[in-house]
Length: 125
Image 1 (cartoon, rainbow, N blue to C red):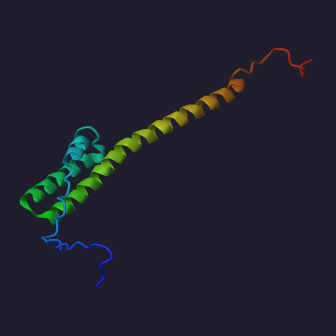
Image 2: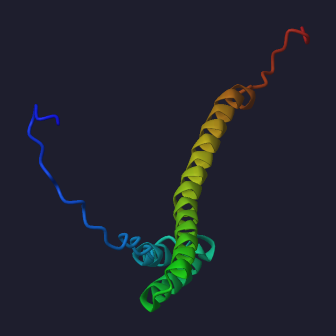
Image 3: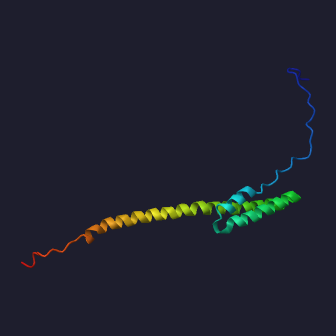
């Protein structure tokens, strides 16, 4: 028997039921925000509908359906947010580049419009 170091006798850990998976998020606040402020192509309304369905399923205890509707609500919320943020930025960039292009075109064509015809040509003499 090995007695070189003291050993502690510990009882085996108690095993209970596995911890339950956390309830899925319903993304309702995000959907309300998208519906009120950034409703690009009515995606905010669709996200709100799926968020409400996810919350109803979560309350009723159907976790799998709640997870499915939560996933759809998150997808539509992301699309609505991206569409409402990216498209105005893209439109602004197009306007800025258009203005820059037009100003360069106007500067290049100034010489053409300021050409004056004079009465004394070298060919007439």
